[in-house]
Each structure stands twice: as structure tokens, then as C-alpha cells.
Amino acid sequence: MKEINVAVTGGAGQIAYSLLPRLISGETFGSDTRVNLRLIEIPQVVEKLEGTIMELIDCGFDQTGILTATSDIREGVKDADWVLLVGSIPRGIVIDGKKIEERSDLLKINGGIFTDQGKAIGELAKQNAKILVVGNPANTNALIGMNSANNSSQQWFAMTALDANRAKAQLAQKASVDISSLKNMIIWGNHSPTMYPDPYNATINGKSAAEVIDDNTWLENDYLPLVQQRGKAVIDARGASSAASAANAAIDTVKAVENYTEPGDCFSAAIASDGSYGVPKGLIFGFPLRTRESGEIEIIQGIELNDFAKSKIKITTEELESEREAVSDLIS
Ligand SMILES: NC(=O)c1ccc[n+]([C@@H]2O[C@H](COP(=O)([O-])OP(=O)(O)OC[C@H]3O[C@@H](n4cnc5c(N)ncnc54)[C@H](O)[C@@H]3O)[C@@H](O)[C@H]2O)c1
Image 1 (cartoon, helix red, strand yellow):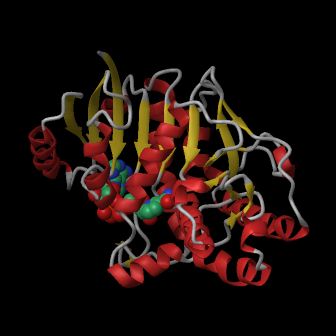
Image 2: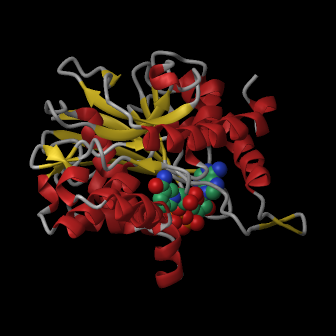
């Protein structure tokens, strides 16, 4: 059996509870790969991970390797092949008597965490490590982490796959087709309500989803907000943020990165812009991505964007630029 090391922060959180068994069951990395899992938590919570590890052992998967828990990020990410940065400080937390509500405060607080995590990853994780940031604000956390890591042979992603899955599901429901007939679902930009889920380039059985649905008023006035606000709708209904679907999206992202992307399809994640589609270089931006047979990840070129798409992409670009500005002292 092959062996890989996977590190997960926020190991005692909601998402991790759904995510961890699937990382060591053979489903994500294949039945021929043993997975050593390092669970990373803040010191106040790290003891709870012993219980999580007991449960993971009790799952009895053949692919389960060595399971460890630590509050030391350096120990956790050492020689990691994959690092899933799920932990972050949520909005609404009280720090030094102040309730953190503003996105700019949240960016700065999490920024500090991602600076240290990035440094440790750049120095200690494998040279070809892949890093997926799930913790919000995911794009800008990834920007800070990647800059601190300062290791261009590692590949950073921020997660937009949950948005893509939501975007596919709504189109499938509207068109009364099976979700498997939907391909090429692109989430442009930020993992935030400014994201642009692209119904014009998504396909249903090979044809533009917008053409199949043939209702631009619905697409532009109802569909977009439905997808953009889905996270909030889940919180309102469930009293807690999306966890099972977020874990599932993280698994989807890892699998998409690890496996060749079929022609005519793409996967959605945010990576550092190389200037494609006029997006300022370096922004962690949601693009249509493909994994080549060589394993290299590339931004798919030549996607056509209509005026509506361009106007939406402009909004999400501006938001990401203002987020970058808010943390400029952390990425210099
Ligand atoms: N990108 C997406 O699509 C997406 C979707 C859903 C949720 N999220 C985000 O994922 C994050 C986790 O969600 P959750 O529901 O599991 O939250 P949660 O509050 O249940 O768990 C988060 C865990 O992270 C830990 N943590 C905080 N700082 C840490 C640090 N520095 N190192 C290690 N662990 C740390 C906390 O102790 C906690 O156990 C949140 O930021 C949430 O907003 C992202």
C-alpha cells in the first residue's frame, strides 16, 4: 500500500466530524493508499480529539494509518502531502470583550492564524503538498497562507466546490434533469455572496444550461441569489452552518485535484490568479480548473463571458481586491 500524510485543522469542529472518516476510508485517496491523519486543534480543544480518534479507529477502515492529535501546527504539517485548513475563528466570537462582526476584523484575526500556518506549511510540508483552505474567509485566508508559505512548488486552493455543487443542484432541479447531466459548473471569484455561479457555461447533456432552461429572468434574478445566499439559508434553517455538504465538497475537491479532468468538464476552486480573464495577478480567485494527465493543475482558457458575466466578475474581483487591501500588512 502507498502511504500519505494528511493534516486537518479544526479537527474537533462540525465539518471535520463528517470529513475525517471519508479521508481514511479509501474513498478519497483510493483503496491502495494508507492515510496517516494528523488532527490539529487549538490547545483548549485538543484533548477532545482523543475521542474523535477512538471513533475513527472504531470505523475499522483498512486504509487507516497512524492517527495523531496535536495543537502544534509545525508537528501537524510536517511531511504532509495534503493540508486541509478547516479551522478558523467564526464571526460573532467575543475577543477581549469585543464581538467580532466586521469582515475586516475577521480577516485580520484569521490572518494572524494563517500567517503562522502558512509559514509552517512552506517550511515543513512536502515540496509538492496541496493545501485546501475551507475556513472562512477562505480566499483571503489562502492568500495570506500562501504568501507566508512562500513556497512556489506547493499548490494552494480555497474551496468553492460547495458553491459549485449548490449551483449544479439548483440548475438540475429547475431543468428537471439528473444532476449527473450537469458539467462545467464554474464559480468565479470569491467564496462569498459576490461569487458568480456561471449558468451560461455550465452544460446540461452537453448544451448550455442557460439555453436548456431558457429563462434569463429566472437565471439572473432568482438563481444567482439562491446560490449566493444558500449558506445563509442553511444556517437559518438548521441553526448551524453547512457541515456535511461542506465536508463533501472538500472531498470532491481533493478527488478532483488527484484525478484527471475529463474534456468538457472542469472543477471549481480558487487559486492564485496568473492574470487569466483579466483577474489581477496573485488574487485567490475562483476559476474553471482542470487536472492534466501529468497531475498539473491549470486554469481552463477560452471560456466566453457575456456582459452579464463580466459585470458580476467585476464585482467579486473588487471585493477580493478590497479584502487583499485590508490584510496588506500580512502579505507584504
Ligand atoms: N469554503 C466553504 O465552502 C465553507 C463552507 C462551510 C463552512 N466553511 C467554514 O469552515 C470553517 C469551519 O466550519 P465548522 O462548521 O467546522 O466550524 P466549527 O466552529 O464547528 O469548527 C471549527 C474548529 O476550528 C478550530 N480552530 C479554530 N482556530 C484554529 C486554529 N488556529 N488551529 C486549529 N484549529 C482551529 C476550533 O477550535 C473549532 O473546533 C468555518 O470558518 C466556516 O465558515 C467554509
